[in-house]
Amino acid sequence: PSVVILISGRGSNLNALIDHAKQTGVYQIRAVISNRPSAAGLALAQAAGIDTAILDHTEYDSREAFDAALAGLIEQYQPNWVVLAGFMRVLTEGFVNRYLGRLVNIHPSLLPAFPGLKTHQQALDAGVRVHGVTVHLVTPELDHGPIVDQAMLRVLPGDTPETLAARVLELEHQIYPRALSALASGRIKTVDGRLEGTLTLP
Ligand code: GRF
Image (cartoon, rainbow, N blue to C red; front, side):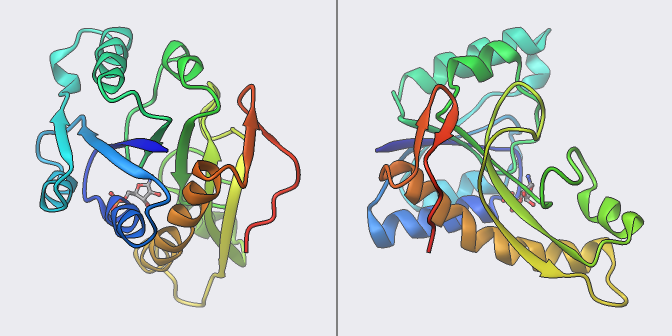
């Protein structure tokens, strides 16, 4: 199964996904696309010999126009899966529906708690004792799609948004490759954008 990965920045999840692809061969990364020309993740992809492209959203008048161009670029690679890895743009309903059931995202909270931005601050403000990360299928409602996998940690005394982010990120790097492998290999199946059957990740 083939994958196109969308990024906006650092690319540490991208790096974990590249490593896993190299080690297991369960999925092939055909291309990495960034909406920001300065995204550090582009260099990681290039170093791994993966095609990269920049689609600068500031050059488009509307979300619809940007998403149409994005879909056109993705179609050049005919991927089975489109994977968001720190892609910091809300996608239009048209785009999401086009890839429904094959569009995956990672979100740094235990959804359905704390959708949107600043999730670690939201967790501290709410006083939760556990926090974590969610891999989910993308549906038109932001951060609300079917949950593929989650991992959690305890919130510790003295935690700040930064310390939480750092520990959550380690979990992200563990579960994203594993969840994508489960989807790509068909161990988890999707039907009409929903997950089918019982989830049995190791
Ligand atoms: C991660 O925390 C991810 O969950 C969020 O954005 C961050 C991206 O980090 N959506 P990176 O670019 O993968 O290092």
